[in-house]
Length: 342
Image 1 (cartoon, one colour):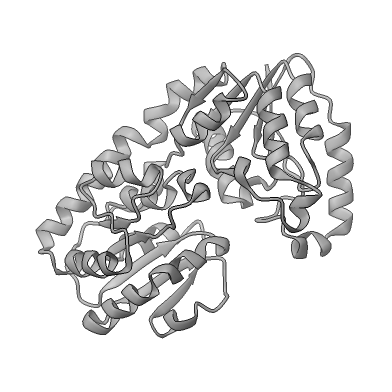
Image 2: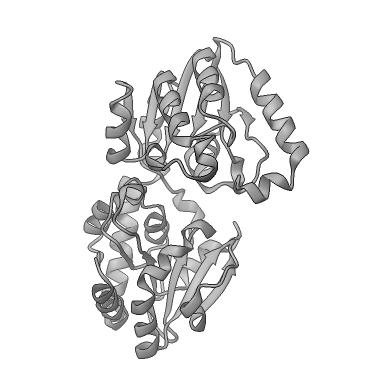
């Protein structure tokens, strides 16, 4: 079978990169791609700046006709202007239609443009049309299983060789690190009071690795912004002292696949995260702290920074071993290959 990879973003989008393209690279697969306008996001402001690209993408999507000798692997959505018809056609016309998702997109509320082009409706039609559904965690799989009986769970994975491993756990100028997309930076504000308290007591700085540039309000006094780059993000993680992943406890966050924690663990970095969704299992397996309110976040960060060098090193090495065993591409290669019928 030939392989067609379809997504809203292409390699510039973190989800499609992790869920699709990294698998292609890891297994050295040949494939054709259908990636809309190949942007990092499909926000209205991005799309209106590229009207010709949008028209070309819509035309290409609607004229794409996979044959019965084509394996289509679709991540999340093929077009931001779709209610699922384009995705359903791709999956049903393929010899093998595979739908992959890693967020609670089935629960996105119909607000703004979602009233017209609903990603939750596109999700429903895609799941129904797929021969196989790959979900990033059990929470997502349970939702998909209500629509399609052929659902498998394959977590988001990391390529361990891409990560510089932390070896020096001494602390001189404390550095707390957060890595992610601009849309999720808002979660840092949920624990702003805790971060500021830790900054006041220890002088710790907050290293934000992202393509964003918006103000983080009260946190600006301690923020050092670092643009995400494929050749530098790993060393930036390894040189920090603790990685954080705050999340609210809601339906959207329960579908998260803990990817920030996976990256911290791959770098052998001690981590602290909200015990929500897939985070909970990873935190417990790594002996990492899982604070649930601002006071606990303050105490947890101060505790990690106050540990001995050997204690922090043990946390980092434990996290790395958990990622290697349970969340690496090598660990899941056979399962993914079976799911897509290579």
